[in-house]
Image 1 (tube, rainbow, N blue to C red):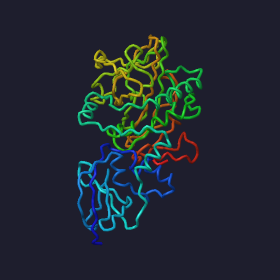
Image 2: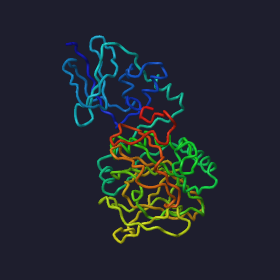
Image 3: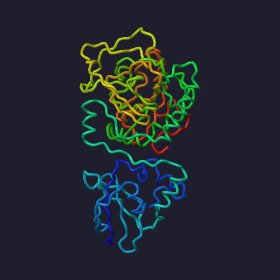
Length: 405
């Protein structure tokens, strides 16, 4: 076919603009469902693409036959130069290394989503729409060097109000469990580790504002395998000794990025997270010993002269802020003897190139609370599984844990 088409080259301001990434549950798919259109049968107009975070870089014309057919995509826009009829998304192709891409076209016209459609849908959800942060090269280098970063992203006030309500409900559902030991709190039932969880924590773990940042650090294939709510009551908050998480996690090869989300203000005064910068760099597991002290969230601590615990720094966060840290990072937190509660949630993401080995460690209370890796459910949140992980164990029969589910 020799028909010429007008080509608009675009680049996203974010790695995944929530609205137009076809393989994610975003505004694009939601609008398709809302309007009764088949997925892939709707075309986003140029104004809507720009509204979603795309920047117009170039306009030109090209023969349809000359359009290449290889690679992956982040963005683009094509239009028929004769009838000016928008075309639907057919194929995503990466043209260059700087995320400039294009969308292929077909001959049948499709409905066009307007800015009014988008605004109407957002209003119907009463949703705060936030574009995702892109980590700079300096941010990524800092994560590689220090083992942690605190992104600029801050979850909105409305979301934090909902999470505080979920926290109260989670604590109320577990009267016999210390609020610092709410393991696997994202499982919305009484889980196999004795905690009755809440769906709000799973929804938080799926938040694209967090996932987009995690993806920039561990890659596009992401598995959620854990979520631990740590709520230190005022005047009586338990200490978490300095330790490495990977010392007792069944992940091979060992790799995880933890997002630690502050529900309350987290400060030195009320026992904020502390880390030892650079302690992850050698990917070395330091010697740990079991502690007989009381009032500890975790009864394992670093006992190794090679670990420089004196270099620990405090990560103070406002509600809605979060840190991201590497699995080999030495970290912990002091007691909360202040008059202010300190609540946060640690969300565990591993790249799907690692295997969650359910038989590596036995179900035990040896860490100070019950841990059952054998039946803990996994969620494939993005991409594809590359390591033969089991996404059926721990879930309801027939429940689909794929990214589009």
